[in-house]
Length: 102
Image (cartoon, rainbow, N blue to C red; front, side):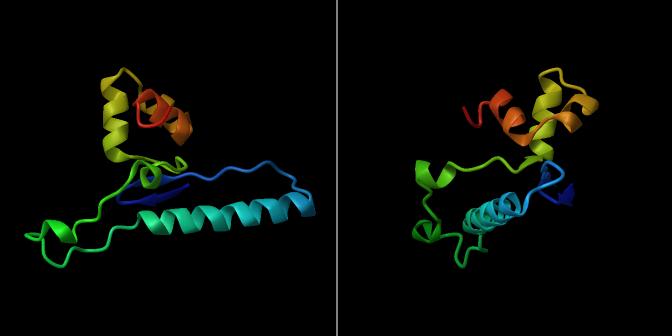
């Protein structure tokens, strides 16, 4: 687990891994890193210029659930989940509960 101001990043893998599985995992991680990099928001030059805002398509919004943000944790608490349950949740499960992904 790695904590960021936006939330926690959780990564899990089975142990042990075969050399072939490690290569597949490494390739997948590189793909995830490219997807995450595309989601990084650059500071806006001119907030009064609506053309400067990035327009995200549904395809760009689709992706892999990598973390549960503090805001999402608060929403899960409002839905009756306690901190232990939230801690054990996979990001994809939390996002499904919140209606962020299907």
